View 1 (cartoon, rainbow, N blue to C red):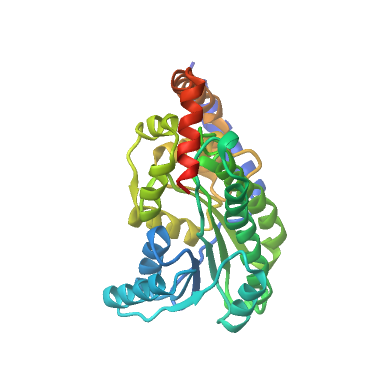
View 2 (spheres, helix red, strand yellow):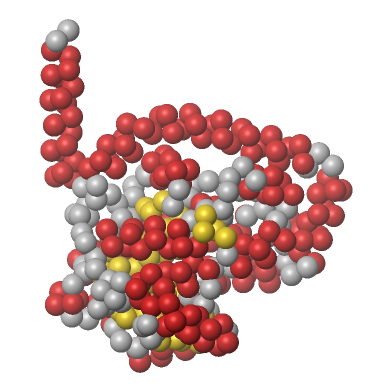
Length: 335
């Protein structure tokens, strides 16, 4: 019996050595001090908090959004709290040509944070197609536009400038976890996962590292508007957890960027989701790899019970189909 612990230790050592040889990409540290951090959706919410924190750590920050008044207010608030002057860019991420012109004129980017996003709630059956298209264009196509516009100058002289990062702001609704009333939104956020995995493989030789961020409900102006449009089923599901603050999510995001982490969770539920849905995601940490390998079965068991609860809520709330239709039409007519 005494040999069993020894065998376990030997097994763990062999696994550690094996994972050390296999893990790709390798561990990395990505500094932000004295480097250009470019943040979209930077006039409010998570983007604004991230700009505050990056500026306070000595980064040269540019924030991008569509509303010039909000951008100027954001710039003033960052200067007031940090003493740092940040640059602003008034662009719609759906406009690739204008976006490319802005990127070409700006300082080469070291950290690109694709933080823009829009949610228009409701069941797909009742959503207007222009709202569906807007979510796809802003959340997914807007991110592709940003990366394609920024990459040429991000790659330029990268070996002498040090490692760079592209951070994609997904959501727990895009973390291999479907939510009622988020059909289109989840599709765009799930799409970022595929984008990020393929992009990391394309850019690893250029020393550019991708991070995928999964914030839960976050106390921002956007969440206030989102709650007005959520179907009743989603309101019940969302009541199961409390929102995080924008500062908390921004701190998790910045820490994930600096460590080059690919799947960046923001709370314990998000951490479990990352473990259970690691699949072929890049992994730099031996400890995280161990957890993904050995906890997968337990996480799946938890997920089955988790989904049972959500499906029960959906079934009970939608027993009256006419009530469901009235709710869906009401939510979408308010957009």
